[in-house]
Length: 338
Image (cartoon, rainbow, N blue to C red; front, side, top):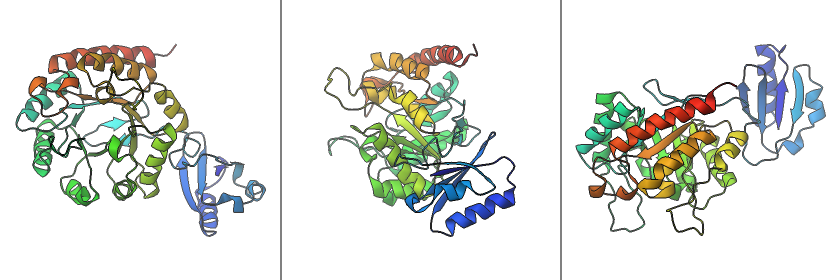
């Protein structure tokens, strides 16, 4: 349930109303926008008489929210959320950013790649220190040593880093390394204990859609994180498993405008994992940009044929630079006032 507060209401009246609601065993979520203030009421709201609320002096109107996701719901928070990822990098609300780098952190070549993507216009460095792999015999990443290398690159280039967290036991390690953005991969999209632990931090989260997850399941995964107090969540469309075998996954471009309609959270597109092939990454990145994403995550490697993982879908630095130029042109077209 949401209660829209009258513009004439004073801060004291608003606090009294919130205290009254919480005193009856409900949680509240307050969204203060330019046009109106909304109080989201979370709990078994069937116990609340909406007519009683509307009779209060400060309440403009009351509306029930049927969707299971509450905190992620645009009805609770009409204005786009803007997430500060550090180093002056903002995502959402018109702030478009590109995360780029290798699938796996491999060693000193990370700095070479980081410098190249930074020069091309990327603002966030991506790289996997812990790697979830289908085979237990495949490269599992460098672990904490990989985090150290990412931190070195961050210090040199002054750009935030995003890297994947797989195990709740490693949350403190990520905190100790001051990781700027925690990535939750597709395989952990419904690892609810992990989502809850990440929700107890104050670190921005890049939450990928599950391998065969629906849009509502994606939003409910975000709700797990937000219900623990961390509302700095970015949703990532990275393709879903379908009957099609010509690409690694099927990129759901429909999900982008649907998510933008349903939620206030930023939406990121990952064309690399969606397609699985270098030749398809750039066209899908352009499509995601045109559809209205708030950012992209793209894999880049200086020597894809020698990459430890996912070399077949990595762009070279030269390809990435060309893609960034075209992405900028598409952004100009889709954001221009008409």
